[in-house]
Length: 132
Image (tube, rainbow, N blue to C red; front, side):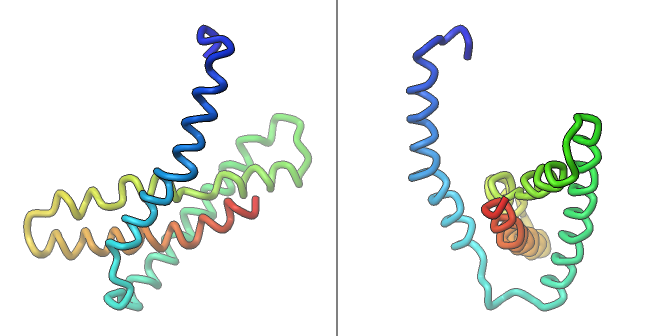
């Protein structure tokens, strides 16, 4: 970016505008449309929430520890851990890959379950990112 000089800021601003107003809503809308909420099984939702709680707990602990040696106050370390919680963009981008690659009915069922857990992860983590 240094080599680009002053031209990098307008390009970056334009890309951010396109991402925020077009690409991101399209990506999340398409992922959300691919999940049938009425087909969600309570067992799958429960296991998904349990998995998310475990993984987010580990992720928060690691993020808190990672910034520990940087002279930050506890409040700043907690803020950093909360800010690193959201995984919605990555989840939305790769969530449907398993369903796209499925060849048999059993694999399609597993792909739909993975996509449902991805949407669950987005619904759980995105508000935390908006708050932090």
